[in-house]
Length: 398
Ligand SMILES: *Cc1c(COP(=O)(O)O)cnc(C)c1O
Image (cartoon, rainbow, N blue to C red):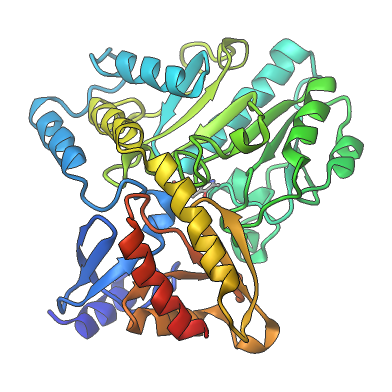
């Protein structure tokens, strides 16, 4: 079947909750993907940073195949031999006492919200059903009904009410607003250290550190959603490390499985995650042996292939080159590590047009919020491949 037939079929039978570029991919390897006609592209989105380890990493394929032949799912009605190992390794890697495993990112965020509320009632002594969580404008934390209840992008929340109460939105990057918003019922501040879906928005330097201090002084939990920013994307294991901040609770997902399988997790101290008792939360697939086998290997790859250093070094180089590029369309180049938002000016005619032009040049990138081109290639990219991409970006933006 050719690309056009597949696209028509998708449009007819698939719910239209996405607006993809018209490229039908059937194969991937490292930073490269191939469409059904055999045309090769560099993937500069990496499935929203889920494929930091590159497409079809041979070590992940092997881990997955081996585990598939042995045991895939027990449910947590029984114990399995891999969850304890994965839990210990993940806690040691990120320096937390406890971890709760889920599948999608949204579920990890839901877990953090439940944990914070439960902690509020059981530990902080907040009056029942009065807990409040502060979030930021421009946030993206997933698609569940509770999470979209505190989104401020109408396309995320419109027509999904009634909304879950208990959330307050402040300006992203405004520490004073945070201080003012905190009341006696505030249990947590939930934030992305860098906002991904909003278009790689970096808050003012020092903001996260200040926010952590304010949270600490007021006995409010700082929850960092590192589902997109974590696991190497910004050149550190967690983006909050750039400000020397250790969140009370952190959510990770996406690259936790290197694109093989949905695996997410919520980590915190035992004073926080310890509030869950048997039966109070769970997931059929959470912590399954297949997920554990794949995620353990995905983390080993990040460490052993030095992907964090690669993101830091090549990221710095990419920013230098992009900022030096002469373009009548570019207003700002922002981000950290290999996470780049190219903000176009009002007269450029929108980012989607440029993403289509990049597609013709063999680069797949994603427009966000009308005017931003987001670049986030797999972290296995090398200098030669990056130069190849920069040359094409110059063709399109110059
Ligand atoms: C992608 C993302 C999520 C949601 O993850 P899903 O796996 O799509 O549910 C949550 N938070 C952030 C910051 C994300 O980028």
